[in-house]
Length: 222
Ligand SMILES: Nc1nc2c(ncn2[C@@H]2O[C@H](COP(=O)(O)OP(=O)(O)O)[C@@H](O)[C@H]2O)c(=O)[nH]1
Ligand SMILES: [Mg+2]
Image 1 (tube, rainbow, N blue to C red):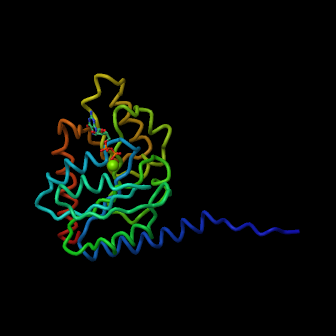
Image 2: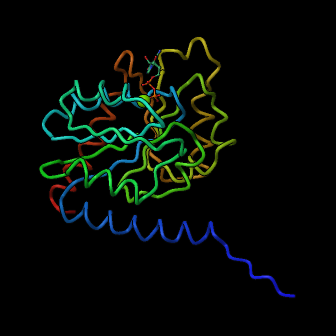
Image 3: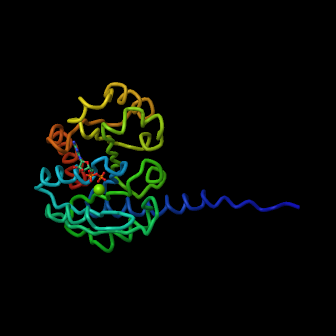
């Protein structure tokens, strides 16, 4: 007897890819840059936004805060003057393209130059689901260790930009920045790696200027 095998995960990922393509086309048409902000819980995603949004004060920024529950991060970011929506995934460990699209529709992107999606904190599921972002940005913090690209290779393979946060804690943790960079670049030679501290502000101007040039390019329709 021949039993049919239906590859459900492949189907889900194919549907996700087509929704992501639609979002990518929409963002291009509207002149808005979409950034998928990923990283472990506590890596400093919200803290980095708290540095970067004021530094990009000339632009209008939207933030979609995805959480399993709660609205603490959304309140922090709203206080910076960004347009904010809280998205609850009800237990799901990542945002997919369809959920992202619904969030964008609900928040409204009229007049926005850039939208950050602060994804659910983990280094596994968000890497698997394309949301249609123009930039995939991963925050990895020093206390997590320099071996994370070895343990979670997909996250560092798909990241366009890796912000190495909590640089101020480097004297306490044995974090080998050169080894970390080499591990990321071995997976992904095009990755941009910017060491920062959201606490002291070190490196945040460089990070903001990297983002600024992408936002300006998108505004010019490039
Ligand atoms: N020492 C230090 N602490 C940081 C830095 N960035 C964030 N934190 C702290 O790390 C914790 C988690 O930060 P948060 O931004 O909420 O992380 P998220 O879960 O990735 O959004 C908070 O207690 C922050 O104050 C940093 O650069 N240095
Ligand atoms: Mg957060």
